Amino acid sequence: MTTRKNTQAVLLAAGQGKRMKSSKPKVLHDVLGKTVLGRVLDAVDELGIDHVHVVVGHEADQVRAFLKENPPKTPLTVHLQEPQHGTGHALQQVVPSLEGFTGTLLVSVADTPLLQGATLAALVDGHIEQKSVVTLLTTDVEDAKSYGRILRDKDGAVVAIIEDKDASEEQKKILEINPAIYCFQWPVSKPGLFSLTNNNRQKEYYLTDMVAWAHQAKHKTAGIKSTDWREVAGINSRLELAEATRLLRDMCIHKLALESGVTIVDPASTWISPEVSIGQDSMVLPGCHLTGKIDVGPNCTIGPNTVMKGPVTVGANSSIVQSNVGNSNVGSDCKIGPFSHLRDGNEIGNNARIGNFVEIKKCVIGNKTNVSHLSYIGDATVGSNANLGAGTITANYNHATKKKSRTTIGDGASTGSNSVLVAPITLGDLATVAAGTVATRDVPSGALAVGRARQENKEGWSGRNSPPPENPRPES
Ligand code: UD1
Ligand code: CA
Image (cartoon, rainbow, N blue to C red):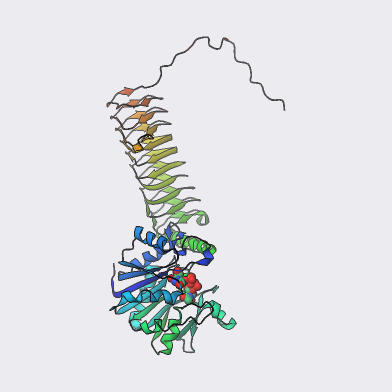
């Protein structure tokens, strides 16, 4: 990883995000399996910088709890902005902890879920190279929405940012906008931050006014254009959240199709997050939703209608049809589905077959083992070449003691249809459990367990020998 010394980042995440109409802070909304803030922190982590500061305020406890559970790699300090008087005021809250810091302060809004590490890197490196005091990212858009507009003088120098709410009709026509991602030379910029006023429509201290301050103080300002506006798009409403999610999906599908050689049959109905990698000549059929750290090997078929939530790995040549897979490793040449549920903590070997209406949880399943129909296998270790018949159930949970117990099944063992294995229990290698058995004791290797009422036939029970009468049908 590259490292950038004397650089610290500040993410502004204190705002309410009113337009989201949510009890959850805007930055904690989900974009393809990860929060908006989590995605921005991933981009920051790529920089290899000394420190990241996150400013929280609205629903601060929720954001703090998220950061505690999902700490970035970069050393983190959380700051409280209470009440929230604007983006400039938010940055002021960090200043006491910058005592003695000399270098580059990268400041970004935290509502930009598509932000890429490379874009931040180009900004930081460009800022240092050009020796500017204030450098901002800018981008050209077709629809300027409510973004701040970039004002340049006749020589093209950036002189100010005007907020949409404060802009004249003429200024509103400007299509170069402010994504709100900046670098400040520190502590040179400090006086500017404390000279901000709230003399505007929103009565807020705008960080954007730092540009005009620098220009007027004859400090060097620079704008670095990002060629892809999608990367720096901020989300302010649920509609923009949906749009950002779709854009991120498009980017991921583009990459998989063009760089990895994956066939994605119907991009519009396929949702794949950036953390997913898929091997060459694999196919993703319509209706799949793949999020989180997922690694699928080559020549696999995923879908239609498969949901996978990482961490998941799938070996080469496997198929996962109409199924749900979370936190599991699946080997190569496996056939999973239709309608399988690999719930959590599974290690499935190679050449295994998990069939329809089978739920598997916290299991190790050996090579060439089949669990083909209508089963619940939980907390079990199953050897290789085993065959668990239709309707085999591991009774792993004792409701009275609230305890779960494990089932161990040896190599080549088989269970008949409707077997119940009451855990804790061990079936030795090549053990057999007869159909309909409720097994409560271990079955030694090679033995047959039969645990069911013996069948009795009562001759002449129906009192007739002739064929039964036809069932009455209602008159139509
Ligand atoms: C801001 C910029 C605007 C830019 C846009 C890009 C200002 C004044 N305007 O506007 O020029 O085009 O972002 O998306 O900066 N926040 C705080 N404390 C506050 C207010 C906001 O931490 O007091 C945080 C929010 O949590 C959010 C970010 O700052 O992550 C941006 O706030 P938001 O209200 O979305 O600003 P915009 O109006 O979009
Ligand atoms: Ca915004």
